[in-house]
Length: 440
Image 1 (cartoon, rainbow, N blue to C red):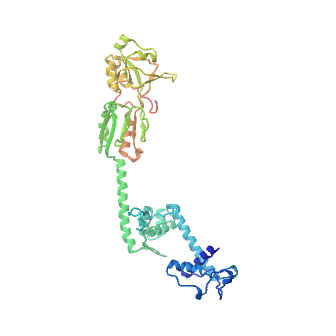
Image 2: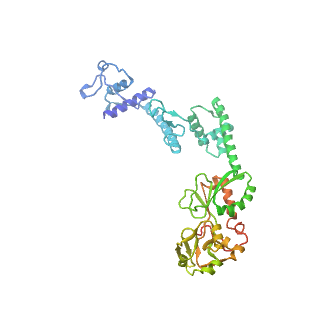
Image 3: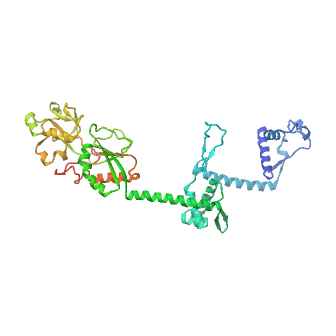
């Protein structure tokens, strides 16, 4: 009860300082009512005056007269004043809540940074202006049109939204930019100077946007590509002249690898081509048509050793390749074979040369094995069993729409790879060489 009365009297003091009459005025008895346990003291018995503002505030709280319900007097003019105050406070709260919903509880214009004195609170927080570019654009339109309504029609926004935006901008800058009148608005001196800076800034942003749009139409820059050497020699080297002729402002840096198809991309590579599916990558992936493959041996090897009739018999033959072979028949039955490789390599060009020399059996891509000059020297093995297709994929960071040079490069590769325009096909019959992109 004592705390409630103290807060009430503090509110009376605040209203009194503002020159606003209180709604209920406490009656001060003519004589000190010490018999009821009150703490009111007469001017003669109040003791020494306070020595500080804090002591003065506590002194006033401790020496208030007791205010009971019977001792209150209704002040009708104060009722009107209080209603006006409530309306003004309510409107202010609505505006503040609108800013809270839009920007958060701390507002859009002030960010407090810790003082550089190791977190010491002696230095006051630094205020940094965080302007809303939408408010800046609204201000420039209002300054050009001369009225809020005309600016609202151009921006297709309500007049109240236009007015709030300009007021919010002035609040952020803590300076008056516009003079309001029934006929319209006019710029202050500060508003005129600020308008010049706003027009320059918006012009710079527009030029930057137009530059980016031009880059989308005419991509330029360096593309760092990492690719297996067999793909670089068989595909990229063949198609790059046409690509660079079509996009003369793009440059290409190619890095090849042969030792490990399981290699993962580095951060400084824009496009990383893989022939095996990636294990785990944070990059985006674009798949291309898969390359179908088959088991082959030379005619000399078959005449000397014979042909296997089942996948398990491959263990008794000399094989060339790497890792475990996965074979699938027409009934989707999958079997794995882990032969002892006489020569271990991942390069299909090397494997094809060794097979033609009669060293063993290997899995070869069909576009290579079906070349007329090669196919007449090879014998297909286990035709009812098909090795897993080789999936060619490109890994890259982020959406392609944010990197026009990457997008046009991958689109150009996608128009050729796995089609009859693929330079790897050469003289081989195209039918049955490639599968769907997601066929594994």
